[in-house]
Image 1 (cartoon, rainbow, N blue to C red):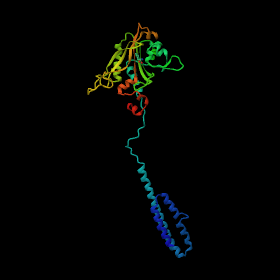
Image 2 (spheres, protein in one colour; image 1 turned 120 degrees about the vertical axis):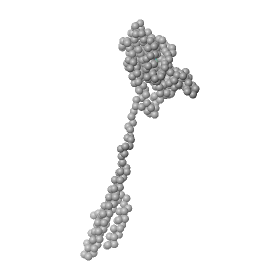
Image 3 (spheres, helix red, strand yellow; image 1 turned 90 degrees about the vertical axis):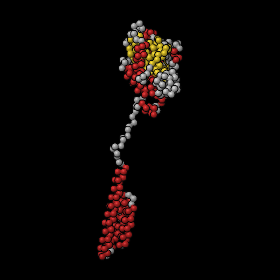
Image 4 (tube, rainbow, N blue to C red; image 1 turned 180 degrees about the vertical axis):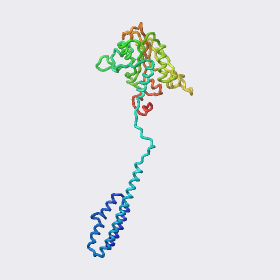
Length: 348
Ligand code: PHE
């Protein structure tokens, strides 16, 4: 009997020492010390022994029981300690570590530039105005002195709305000039950024693009006023050392009409790079075309009920993406509409 107890003690101690985790340990404890455990069984069978033997073996069995209990408890504490040191290892927190920054959106470069345009012209007394993108023939063409058979309509490959006679996706923001003048009296100063549509598409043309229109109607305005306003505004919007050049041109709604060029921001207007090579951006001309302008045609004023003998004024219309491209030296218009975050983030 004593031997049996001795070998039970030894095998159990061994098992405790190799127990992998708390679960294995407590299962082992149950099989040895539990109500139906091996040691318990042995203790129960003691009753069959003589009084002498009972005393001796009983004492030994109890000693074993105490020893095993202690061992189980010790090993349990080891597991417990390990558990806490693992938590320290796995769940540490370094409060000096940089946090995870939430992803933030940013304004699109076009929206941003529109804000800047409104801001810069706003400081010069131009108020914001706009018109519908789906426009009627009168506001997009006829009132602007472009009659139905006028070849100028071919200049702007137009999207006509199907089954609706004389309804177009506006080809220019000049419609806003008409809409505004129809409803207000001079003096007038407006700035009108917005979407426009034409049927062409390549690296520098998109079927949808933006323009911004400016209009000033007052007594005795001149091209010199136009140049002063544009020079001041474009220097703020594009580059502080920008220069402007006016070239004669033709638009049905202005007379005289001009094409506005700004000095090339790539070569500084010289047409030449520091290494003597031709500037690729302006193709050695030193100038970049940015839009049309002119003195509002008397017929346009008559169409909206303003007396051209009393008032005159200037108007201009610029491609908005074009100016952003010049400012940031962007060479493909499609970047604005593809929404590639690598492009957009540069303006954040
Ligand atoms: N609307 C013209 C265009 O889109 C530009 C322009 C505006 C010209 C105002 C003169 C005056 O080409």
